[in-house]
Image (cartoon, rainbow, N blue to C red):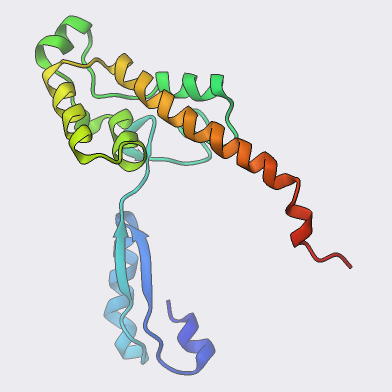
Length: 172
């Protein structure tokens, strides 16, 4: 966070986006910054992208079954979503009676972060899960359709871009 100040030879304010897991490092930096002659860095704490393995785990590209990649095919995306961790109960009867736990559900988190822009619909999905009106399989199916629609569009655009990308490279 001090590199820009060093390079410019003057104090430069710094804003650091970081996950909450990195906060202790930057608190120490804030404690010593002024003593070193720099501004204290400002922090923005970002929410971590949840893994399909559960909302307590961070998404990572090293665990390929718990992360959806933009190059995944339809079958792979469906398998990953249908295998995702949810806040569901042991049985359908139990979930219909007691409801699910969207607070810990990776499928609900994906809807919340990326795929349901309407807050009222998101609230309704939350309430339907809590009340047992919707089951995890149904919710996964809804998410899969949204994810695949997005990826199919993205993949088509990526293929089209491959045809013109060479125009942007300078060759020797």
